[in-house]
Image 1 (cartoon, rainbow, N blue to C red):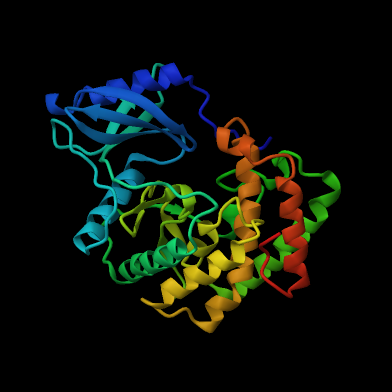
Image 2 (tube, helix red, strand yellow):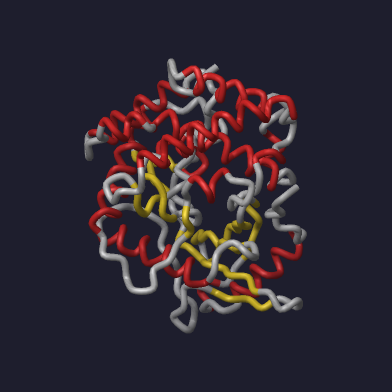
Length: 334
């Protein structure tokens, strides 16, 4: 394996760190912590005086403190612009990011967020939810294009090199569980075409900028007919329509995936126009994301999410690569 990214601390150790971070907040925020999920980070539910909060404990070696503070700056600006996104809670000293020192000299960061109400959809979601998601994503992109970022703003880069090369942020796609050695050539051929297409596309400000980068089903909350977006931890600089590819992460092979994409585009176009050049790159961005997730599955093989993908997920990925190379239809679906 070329990348080790899963947090190896036990749940109990993570809970102790979360409690250490929570101790820095006022008495009104002291309460009970319970682990919600583990992926890039560990997320805890805090219940205090009848209210709920989400405490995000970052794993080591992913984001610097300045990266996290930059994320929170964008969230503040989005809320000012009327978009419902998470809001960080300040501690007793007015800080929004906690830095915890470990015994080995490394540091961990933590952020406490106000709770956002809503239900997480599954793959049986009403496709109209994707129309709402596309609508919201277009608003995020409009804000990104017009927002004057503060001095010192820094976020992760999501381009071809950092997404799908052997040295990508999430490791090497060759490490994906159940990926047959005989199928690597198909993936390599796909990546060669993807790289050429995106090099020609370029990183013009019209098609490349600050994006959420992980707008998938598990980061959506449906509440009273509205779709809300959470978890901006992976927000960074990438192609705007990567957010479309991310919307169907892990389920690109689902029979309804093309329908979901159609509704997402329909919702986006209600707010902003997708150029012909961008639409022509949608298949490329879709398959790039799927291969990026192969790398993720390899470097996060211990996670519940990776293990839930099943033994056929890599085979489906290769099948979608073949479909992309055929260039006759979107690389999604059964």
